[in-house]
Length: 317
Image (cartoon, rainbow, N blue to C red; front, side, top):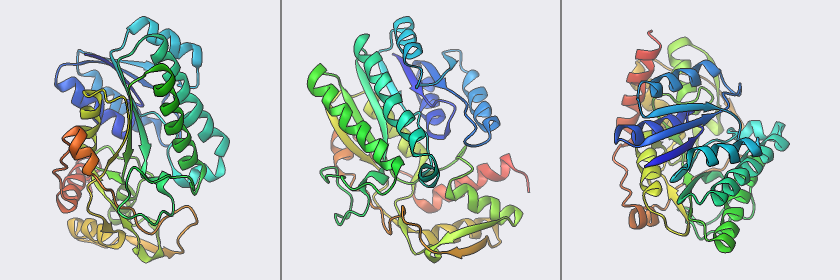
């Protein structure tokens, strides 16, 4: 199969692309290598993928509508894994216009290009942040998700709704996958797991919101990428599907697991919980199990051990 993976030089995108490459698919990666975090980390991910003869990278931006149409016309993709986005819940409060432009409008350009060129299946990454302060726990896909707490979640939710209208009007196969607290090797340096690792390794001061009394459904990146690949392989009409572990862990315990692996404490500074943060996220993954045969394998303790092994190899202490 020939696929487009957007955001292929990013954290989750590079894992998804590599999984597809290993099974023999032809993958075109798309990334703009922006400077939200150090582009050198994205270049390293791209170099990892470039070792596969069935991979090529296109450096462009999903906001460039005509370029997206040109790419789809040239490559004739059979499926799309759309993982490119402006990430970062807190950063979105500073630049809401950018998040709408990328996460909503950029996604629309891709949907339009896929529709124009009869792409068979379109998988669109979304986020557990769309659930906001829901009272339905665990989070289930039938929740209306109509009270997003910040522009990142609002733009992602708007893209989900737009995807439904494209399915309804144009009969496109679009599966939305909502990610829950993903961590693992090649993780973004602004994500909690990486921040804690940096803190225990280098003594860097990091904030610990609400004394770590927040629950997150930490999900190892290999399990997430398995779910995305399963969605790519199964045109389902229109579906929204949670991809998490289904077993939330207290943030304070997650920090402690990394500290135990490192044999030293993180340099944390207690901070009040921020307005865009929720106290608990917890994925109901029964739909993913039913429709995608999704079955997360990596416990949080094992995932932290794997992550720490990668981190220390990449950043010798």
